[in-house]
Length: 251
Picture 1: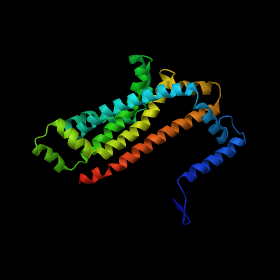
Picture 2 (picture 1 turned 90 degrees about the vertical axis):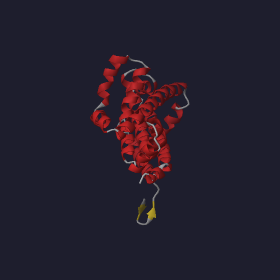
Picture 3 (picture 1 turned 30 degrees about the vertical axis):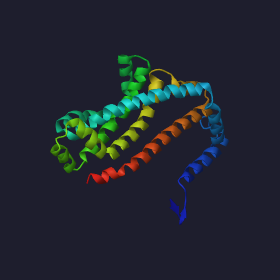
Picture 4 (picture 1 turned 120 degrees about the vertical axis):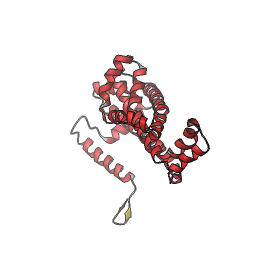
């Protein structure tokens, strides 16, 4: 970013907001907005504790299992929708509906069907992540050049061979974009699940901090979540850019 010919780093905006936050917090206008420096200090106090590590383990386990299920199930469905008009017409309205629906309202239904345990939290995570993965995989397959499809027919490749050696690799940029967005939605899903289904993990900490008006602790926990979400998104973004040449090879 250049301002008046001077190159300003992207982190400058975050530093500016941190300074503004610190000033507003020092004025003590609201208990809901403690000084930024206090939050950072509290974050380094909270992270090494056994309570935080236990909550991180529970949350990470639900996140990883739920996201893995969404990826393993979502990519094949998206590929099938991209290659079959019949399947696409059958599933696309449902995928679009669930992608745009307020999924939090469906969590009580999952609780009724599967109980109040970890299984329901994982299913909530899958519910939040899978639809964007399906749509992006579908979009990637639909953008494959017809010559690649004809090549699989010429070599008499079966569906599994075409799926693993052509469709997935040619659609990889869109698939990785869907996984990146799905991971971000998974974080939202796992926290909502832990708050509504069974108050465990980070959901338990949020409940504890908010009930006792420990705003510094709650903001510190939010910052940790934001950091993990940013780290996952940027890591997958780097991987996504490394596979961009596959998009060129389709044309």
